[in-house]
Image (cartoon, rainbow, N blue to C red; front, side, top):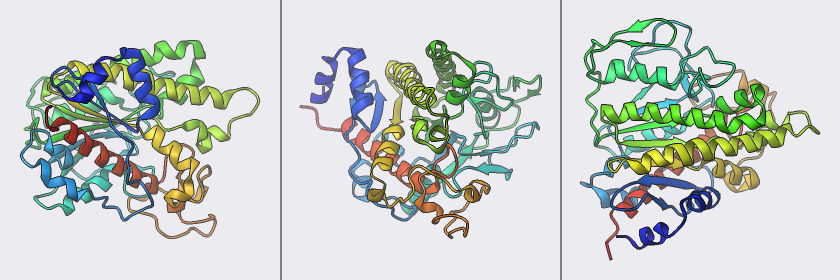
Length: 388
């Protein structure tokens, strides 16, 4: 048993989760032996903005041939991350591998595309990315009031099941339409070469806060967490074993939060709601699910903490505008990095933390990608550390 495992097992589980939530940039869950969770030190290489490829080459070859080495470069990356997602118009979902309209909310490469560019530079083939994400989607449109008319996480999973599993049963999209699963699997993914990435909550939290009394938020978030876990269980039954989740960013410090009416506590309520969502849905519901699955490895990226540090010390990360955005950039949805300064804006988009009221710019996504690289490497180092 690892020394760190023996220490962690001595902690009461509630205090254990709380301490990690406050002090760590990344959590990863795995249930090998008796260890439910390991703490990862803060990323040490998040200084300044590099090019899109964020390398960790010195550690890459060390884990070649290990069971979980594919976390550093999976062959398949299945994405449920709405920063860059399908522009749903009510039509039947497309094959994610075929060209279809998307909406990009960071005006450049997302953290996922940053990663795939990094992985491609390592040779040995490219990573196939299948993006099931739908713009503005919540975890569950039946739970999050007032009910968002878009494909939520469960319905996005139905797209995955249609194109990437060998089931042949019919599945509904929640709107009375049925899509069969008769088509062959479009990508030969396996449990040892595929990672499943999720980023939810940015829509759930403001919608719930707007429609519900604060006293009902906790119970609503628990229901959302249970729905989230039910979706993960479906993926697990389909063979998925590697998962990555990202926290909701501190929206109370975003342009949306800072524009709220002062004097009524709205900003404070938004901040508290974000933290409660991260704690209940991610650290508690998903954390327990990951802990209970001995064959699963989960990364929870502490993007809340990352954004806080960047906004606290923007100069350290080459940002000039940590709390505002330029409407001209927000009007556009460019897929490639918007490098030129708009004449109506104070600076180029790369100098803004926020691209619009709630979505970070592509420049922030560069550090987000690096956070994943740090997390995957630290998990492998802990997983394969010598036993003493």
